[in-house]
Length: 257
Image 1: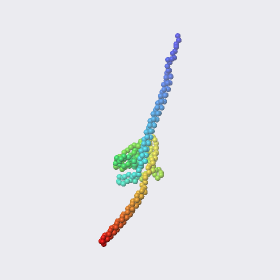
Image 2: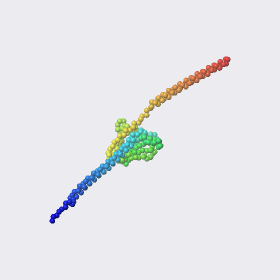
Image 3: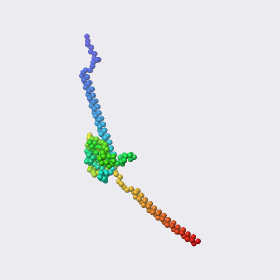
Image 4: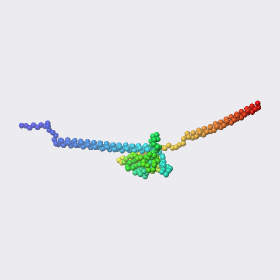
């Protein structure tokens, strides 16, 4: 009697199963690591994109304000006007770093609906690690009035300004006249120091118009011509009077008859 082994129903051995499980586990770990890296990179990219977007929006607001900066002196509480057209320093408005205060044009007021002009008082102040934009409803606000605040940038460590005056950059200025450009160096958390330079508009000097002088000469000439015509009219009246005297001669002729 012979024993016949049926090899067609032979399964995996324990060693083969362990090897297969180990291979699948390694593939799963590798796929999980790749997936975690992709997700982390996506989060970092999104976070950096949000920071960059906020940074661009903040610098855009600064560029719009500084691009319409105007040389206007503030009105003092005791009366009169000050001598500075802008103020800067770390000891104003309780700012944690350097602050900048100035006036700008171009504040929209369609059809004059609001009882104000187009000049706006603007201040950039650092508070609680954020760069804030302050403005008041009127250029000269009431004493004790609270400004309207908007956060421009977050995670701000420090802010420094430089001003291009007399063909050189200066950090300390008296603010009696507008600079040609303003450089802003801002230090942000996770990004380090970033510097931006803003070109300021040039004010148009007040030059007397030559047309005004021409109008004055024209008025003078017209006045002289008018006086001359009046004199001629006067002469005509005297001649007319002479004619009346001749008519008087005719009356003498009648009496002779």
